[in-house]
Image: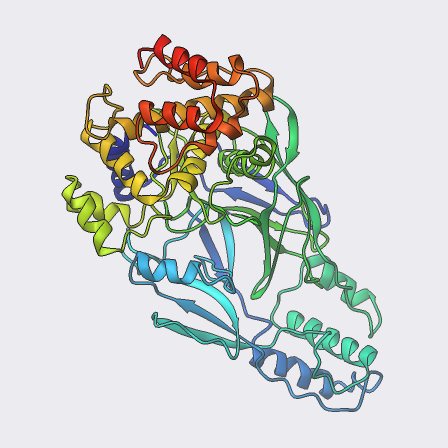
Length: 545
């Protein structure tokens, strides 16, 4: 945990002035060569919209398509029964007035939120969209599709259109299964044609094929991989892949190898693909809206059969993918391996690449109930200013600002900060508030061991450097122990682990309880639990404790 006060200032500046990013353009190329479409990545990161599309799935357009087919006498071969096309979902948008509203929306797991309208072309891909009518710095409209019986929260919202998205598996079908599927396919196809949403190839096929032909549905599949500079390409582990064709939305999570299969089938091409950095195990990596929403990486429009992406170091998504994998590996592989508590599943991480000072911290702000008046009074009593208190309300649990050059360097920082997050689960929120207050009291540094809260800092940083080193060495085969020139001396734990038979990271971690607030208390706890009094005393003494 480093430079907390300075980092708060940096975060404020990033919010006010925006986050600069690499100016290198990226071009997404469809796997399906029949689409012949390239989508340019806006170097400034902002999505650029094209023309407005007619929503083929609106109730109005689906009914027009149905009436068109009946007028052409094309439904007799399917069924003479009537079908009542009614809304089964709503295309809506929310206007959150502040971060509280935005958090309410993002915490509703039933919503797939988009910051851009779904019924527009995208001329240039980006990482965010800001409605031109919404002042910069304020939350923009959030678009999504909800069931007709959705209970709206008390947030300004607008129903854009009532929609009918065909569901061949609906329990309410009145026709035989095969007839019902064919009827829905015919109506969907006719609506896409009437609203000019077919690709050139699909239009050509419709002219060549006889009536009764329409494109088959495909469940998109593919792999999302990131370049690990030490080990080569590997899957982006358990991250969300989201697709949509106008308002027809679906999503799933990759497996550990980066493979995904979207559960909803698409009948038409030009499906939009995006990575949402929300992990299936619960943690999120914040990005597009700083620390208010998960980072999103739009990958462009591709075939309905699927899309695969390899993410290299020149991509903004490399950092998010690397942090995702490092966090997943730490939680699901390394913590069980060494018997250490996993960080909270709802962990929020915020990270950006920066060419300036390297900053990192694990304030665990989202885990601590900062709305509690008693905690508020404690922070104010510790000298935390109102401005810093307000910032803490929307701070993540972990943030990292660093221009990582390789995976090993990134994982080293990730493992260190996550070691703090594991410590938090053992020591608790009151301990952590003292820890944070100690760093603030020291002007963003660790002190010298004489300050009132320096003991909290010493135990925490000793553990963070030691266990971060253990994880890095196990995963990569080599590592360097950080913090060896600081007063708290992480070599103490290293020597205990390496020189006392039977001592392990798990046993050391067991002692990191809320009442272990100094080197002396840690030493006493280790001896009371495991003995080895003379050896433990000697090791602490070797480093001046």
